[in-house]
Length: 360
Length: 187
Image 1 (cartoon, rainbow over the protein chains, first blue to last red):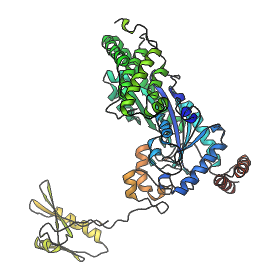
Image 2 (image 1 turned 60 degrees about the horizontal axis):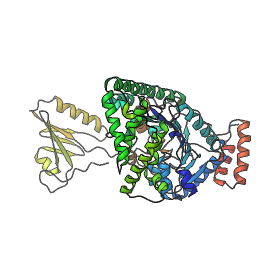
Image 3 (image 1 turned 135 degrees about the vertical axis):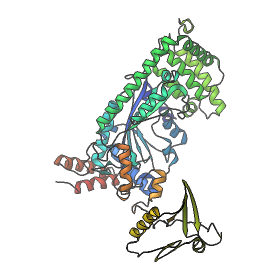
Image 4 (image 1 turned 90 degrees about the horizontal axis):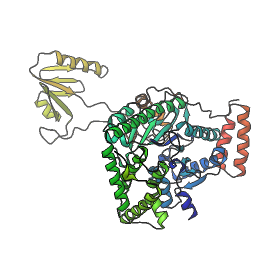
């Protein structure tokens, strides 16, 4: 039970601090590695997976970078704990679906993690709040050096680090950003901005759901480092593109404020009304409605501006976390009712002052 | 991989061994024929040569490709009516690449995009080179250097210490890897 509670605690990257936190919720950098001695995980036997799991987890326990981390073996832990880790994006659904000894080692804040026997033998990852991939990279780099010193990585001087997916071989470095882009969506300019980013090697999809539907105006932007760049250069290049996206979003917010203040205040007021009085809310509804209030906070309406409130609302109302909070598994309808109840209580916390008095 | 042409389009009975492509203007019409029906159309192919209408080309196995090119050239040059007959032979047998270490075939890789082990990179090198260049813009690695063997005295001392700790904690798989790194030292 204690472990459930600690696993369902909110990760560090949700806390709304960090640079440019009005647009960028979190930055994540990861590298993937494999042991030279073994085939890639999907081709390994159960015995080989066990050896890899034991070897890597031993190496991690030798590393200062991973001091006081906790190890979770997905072959042994209950499904609820697995889902708690998926909700914070520590691991992806591939880990759920595959078999054999596999898992993840994480710090208390679920921000610095090393996963074992996912798509590759090792993935070292760190997420930080706001726009700060360099901060993530510093820890990832150090941990990679620690592990690489006592393990034997699969490496080719011309091709770099070898991974199961050849498209990420080389630095095997990946940058991910969770970003909030409501103004670009409202002004209809999101497609051209994202298409420009795609030309620069950054792919975008809705954080929840596919590109067609983007509940909560939340996107996940992913960039894969090129073989022809150093890691530091790759992170710099990506950062430039993200900086442009941040600028576009802020310009679009200004434009909306000067041209469409009345429409926005109407939209915000309606969202507030539904949140306050609805008896049931789907997850997507919660995302969209709270996004309206988050937007209000960013354009100086009398409302709490701390992004942590809006981030935590989302995470706390995902299925596994709700189950831990309530104490038992909920049906879909049960989840919707619980969400609506939680939202009502949450509104009291976010200090809305005279939202209806906002002058147009 | 042999192309399976199925049953003859004309008689519907015999297995087809000849694919006849007719170019009529810009339209292309394919027919798969057995040897008998092809012969009725005036086309026959044997190990010795090709008979096309009243033209006969004989060729030896040695310079098959050159002769075939020459035949193709002749077809283009001859003053044929608007329907031009073109001969296509089944493609030569291709041996599918397989990685001996993990058993991944090229077809599997093409379907999933995932390789099975480090040796696949060597086995499918030609196919990968275009992927790597396409995705990365170049196929020369410029990232951090990795030392997979002990290179300095500090490395050796560090590894020896780690080996002791691993053995003491009964981490035998890790100990084996560390021991190999020490043994393969560059000093």
